[in-house]
Length: 384
Image 1 (cartoon, rainbow, N blue to C red):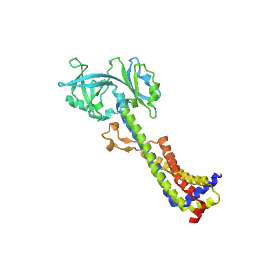
Image 2: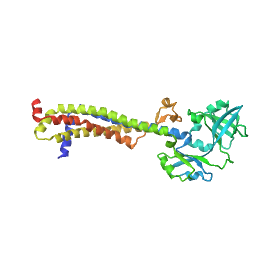
Image 3: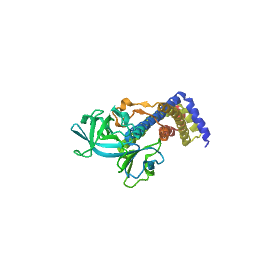
Image 4: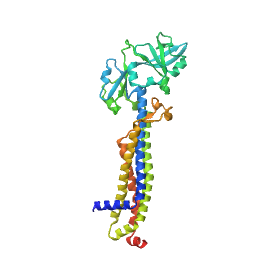
């Protein structure tokens, strides 16, 4: 079989119906371009949710109950950009006869400001300074205790026991009740206890948290978790986002395939004389099917290539400045830091739409092929 001959005939058939070919090309190209951009946008939304969640305070990987003799530098495995050392304690806050419980985190303020974004959510006052006896508290708890910036409060392990006095240097509000009502921050003192400590690991772009977790060599009593293990709801949301994109692709190309099938039926009716002559000359049904599939496949591949170029160009244009969705995400806890989304191309997002377009287009060719196969040469020629 001379495949080159059939390729030439397929493109001649398409060229004879220029307007129909152009309409089909525009339909397929626009579908591919739109889905590539939407997939990149969906990936960008997932990236933004992860970036907002880990940059607020927790980091990509957390390690808890690290022995005191383990230095923070030992956690700087490949892919780790910064390690934050923290000590936590459950304490009571007392002020003006009012009492509230909180988880007090002793931190290095300079390192925290360099790696996290919680200080950007300051509502009054400022973030603590190194070496100061200060407290950075959630705004709801400060209001509950009747505290204002500059007030002094007592921090104690148990009500009724002596404690230490701290000055409220600032309040914060993230919109996440679990953070605003349960966490407080104070500078780590030089004479801090030598007990177990916790760590927040911030990774370089493109580093897999699971790879870092597996690379850490820590004692058995230390618990190491990635952001996906700490926030399974976010992981499920991202997986659901990806699944919805696949369903959208299937739905779009199912509709496009109906258009392709109808268009090629019109092609066949328009060129029924040529198909009848070819059959009378001895062209077999499978050769006619090959001709139609080459037309459909060639048109789809060319249109998909055009759609890929348009989709990539639109994504690159949007990914530079990003898309500010702050007005639509202002009450979403996974966009507590920033509502800017940067669309990002992925290999699957770039390849899957053209492949699905080709698959559905070839499936759409079954109807036109069956239509030609049922026609007898004599009946076709008599009908002309």
